[in-house]
Length: 409
Image 1 (spheres, rainbow, N blue to C red):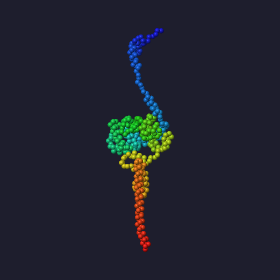
Image 2 (cartoon, rainbow, N blue to C red; image 1 turned 180 degrees about the vertical axis):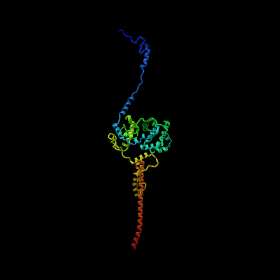
Image 3 (spheres, rainbow, N blue to C red; image 1 turned 90 degrees about the vertical axis):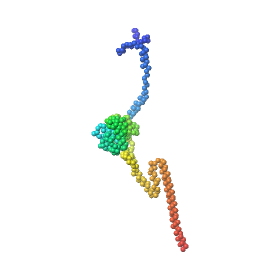
Image 4 (cartoon, rainbow, N blue to C red; image 1 turned 60 degrees about the vertical axis):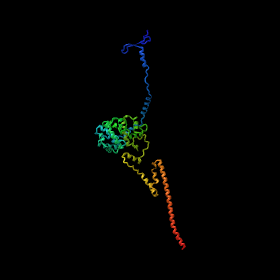
């Protein structure tokens, strides 16, 4: 058979391109095609670095795989213990402080104010303060029209009520100027308000806007999460606890965790002296082998009272009643021995609170006092001895004269 002629040959200077897809055959010079092909042949693609992309999935997988042991069983028992709804947060929490007859804007504003008052304050105190504010009229315009003194009397005795008066006034002013007397609709914008933190922002988004943006972690959630081992490593702040919980806990449970743990911490898992015998998780709790915390000392009770009533009267705090009988006991032997009122025993009670330099000064004072007392005692002895000798001489002299006269007689 005769060989078929190729489309491209060395002899011809032109090549034939067949009609493909309705395109007519055309004669194109070979030099133009080779120049066009060379452009695409030698073009290099940009280099892509994949080092960071290889490392990042490993970290995400390692964090996502961790979860605490028996956490589902613990959650079921926690729901059973909270089924009675007998905690203060169930009846006096921030979700129960709003006026149902108010407008949606006012309800959202009241929820934000209740959360601002609830920090470092018990639910009972917050609920009572909100009732007084609602009777006065808890709206943006009414709060701005109030004086600081009137607002302070209405919210007292919430914790740090003086600073909260300033925060509420400043936040209310920004809401009126920037948000048309409404609250922001995102957690990031809420955190920019004065006196509002991440915990308040996430709870406010759930209560006011019915949106779940994160877990609201307060002192109860922070304490219990570390106590039951729901964090991979112990956390130091509530914000660290929130990030640790959100790394493994399913999103469907984020809105439920705060309410469950707060009530559980108010009734059973107390901060000091938890009621472990009443807890259904006592067999699986990692803190079951830890001894109960001791009862509060009188000094700690005094601090708690100061936190509950932050009014600064300017007076010095009273001494504890246990110190007074000790001082009386130490004064009694001083009066019997007729010593100077500044005795060394009075300084020994304060040695534990003084610095080393002050302790040395106290020791020097003791030595000086001892030397003074010893010198005074020696002088008194000498004076007494001299007086006695003078008396004896005065007494003996007439007797000798009498005896002499008798003998002579």
